[in-house]
Length: 532
Image (cartoon, rainbow, N blue to C red; front, side):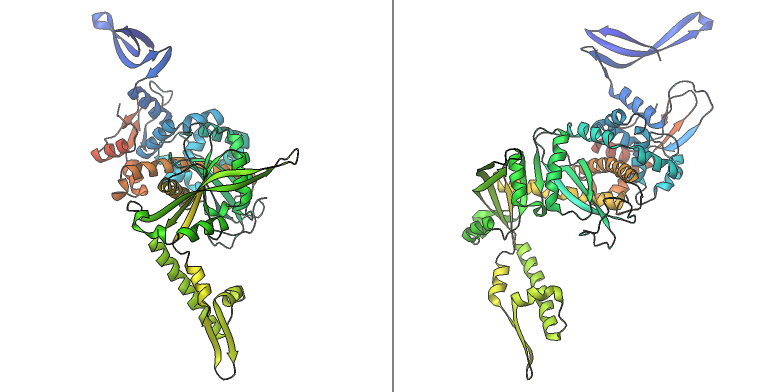
């Protein structure tokens, strides 16, 4: 459609216009539609114009005459929501730059994975017939495998880099690992390891970075299935360097704690918050001083229902320089945060007594478990006599030693001084566990059967893209208190039933939108689609 500009009160507006000849009156009519304005030489579109462009991209139907007769009727509301989220988060633009020939297919499969949770990708053609989506065409199962194989490492890293640069520098990044079982043993990283889902299959480990403020995934990578959490920090630090993040702040679980890892984080000048095992000497020395005093009312937080204590301690830093071999030593300031949860103490003690009951029963029955041999000797004195049979006596001092630390846990940080702020940020790490749950359950990644490295990496990337949309929706539902009325699935179903109609030579027509649906779009912070 022709465009022009008009200056009104010093502002240069941009418009599209229709010109029509009125033959009987022998003159032309012109109708203008203002679509934006020019600011410092840059076109700034109106929200309605942006929305119309997004609608046309979503359904691949251009305004104006078409070369063939085509009438369409598709479900539109949920995929429109994803289009709007993709524009808002920069996902669509970044994919378009990094995957210029594949981005529409990637988005369409990601949309399918979200809406058709737990269904095989082989059902995509059936879904595509009834839904508006970016690609606009069917993707048979064989074509999806070819698509996955074309998603190369370089383009993925460029996408991660673009998305990482959109994150706030003040944001803490949670890092964690989950295991993915695999039916295929042809993949180089498939190994038997400590399967976190207790699945007897070999596995691949998936590591992920997740923003605690944006609540969005930032980056992922695959690791061999038999690698321990604590040994992955070196790989993580290398990946962060490649992502070119200026100010890195990491949240880590206790499985990643080691002196070597803490020294590496100090060496890279990264801020960190990490849970640490209670048995460490640096924790016990402080805990022995304050174990009972921190359980007083003065140390209690009513908001978090927990007792807290903090102290600044010194970390004995050392790092061997790789080139010269010289040892760099010194002390670094470290904030130690201790917490006591009385309910957790009760639960820990109940679980411990259940274990003691099991050990005692095994000793009396004579059916000993070889894996419990150390526990028998630690907590019981026992001996069998011809007359009295097996005699078992608890070692109370060992039991008291174990129980004294129940309900306590510790965090250390080189950045956060306030214990409650440290606790808030650390608890946000639970978001990554929820993300892993979404990947495995909703996005069908609990077990994988792909037989090539390229297909695995490509499929993981598309599922990662889908996870970004799920994470945004989850965040907005939580902030807007929508979970009291909807599950995530119910919310998407409520929007998915909105239809759109395509007619030759005419703009896209959107069916009626209910008040409830309008409120949902508003609460999810995306524009309400408007019929044309």
